[in-house]
Length: 180
Picture 1 (cartoon, one colour):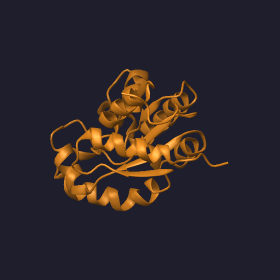
Picture 2 (spheres, helix red, strand yellow):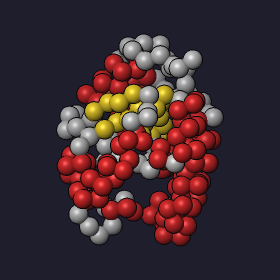
Picture 3 (spheres, one colour):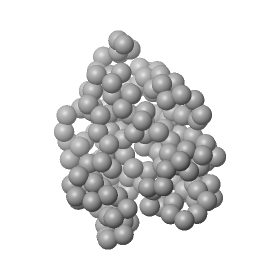
């Protein structure tokens, strides 16, 4: 499939709540744009030699966010790529500033009901242990959406095939100009 526009001059970073499809959409977007794909959570696990849940258990959320920031800084400084971040990465002010300055930040968004249905299929998310995901996701959306709104672009994912979300991102990127 041909690119709709020339290859970007900076990495594309997908931000948004857990379950919105950042990794799945990111892989497809990277393939569509002919760029490498990197999942920051996978890179964090590789760097720490343990999974995300273990990192949370051992170091707490603050320790995890510190490591996450360092990994994202390394990724942003590497080759131009599509980077999927964890749901809380963009909430950290230093990580957010780095992404906004050096990348195209895309807020991939969906309503809490759609996200709850998606995340209930998987049990690996540390913030969702032992409970109904909908109230937590509604609470996270209320707290985080104003921060995600600082992203350069906003794309709705909803209950559409991931390929449609990729098309929406490509369309949004085609009309985007980097701040000067």
